[in-house]
Length: 159
Length: 193
Image (cartoon, rainbow over all chains, first blue to last red):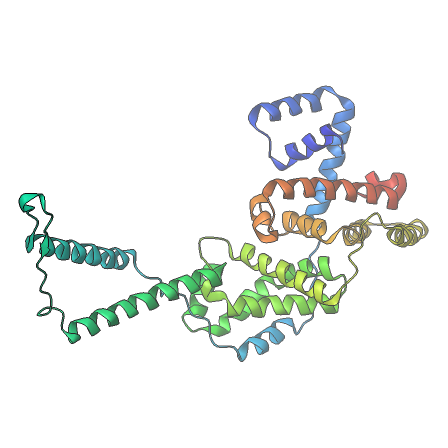
């Protein structure tokens, strides 16, 4: 296809910028050959637009509805996790780590007498870390893990 | 007078449990989906199977439809992938417009035309013949552009192509249709159109 014809199609489709559009309009006006080609393309364009769509069989809709009748009713996916919840969980862990770090620093003796590095980390967490706390923490982790896994699988499914 | 519900309103109703309203969506889009399927399958039985399969798939996945895009564009994407799967499975002949067989067939059409004369109906029939002889992708692009009211970007999304590729294919398809009509109708193409 020559460049002029391609430009004429772009002109008909409205895909040209203002200056190209003006150029083509001028060419159509001044050149009888281009004008004749333009008129032919316009006729073709309108013929394409008048094409009829084919009709499927009369029972088409009924057949589709019978096929979908055995399917479970579609439901909207509303299980997307709110971003605030994600940020909340992230914040909880950051704060927990900071508290733990602060506690360790507070109870530590970092003095170095006579250049002998003798830092004694006095960490007595036994009274805080009971089996109940540990199980709760693990359960919480498990729930978060499942939420992330669910999100990951959904994204994969959408792709 | 009952106001016609939009596609999105119908989808919302279906997702809220009024599944019978899916029939309205099917009725609204079946002609176009069927025509598009026919561009790939080339016979009515196969096209109907593809179109039906497409609507069943769309129903199952309706919950995942992102309502920011046009339902028709989403539906045509499903039609295209369903048709491609069908073609791969059935190894249908998707011969090019330049194949020798194609020209032999067209010659027959041309003779029939010369013998019987023509009217406006014939112009549509000859256009349909010419479209049938295009490559499936090109025929689908012509159909989507002229009858599906889809932009180049939307067609690109439906057919998994860049908009620029769609533009090039659209130009090529129109050029081939023009040549085809000139071949079919000799010098009378202008009178016919």
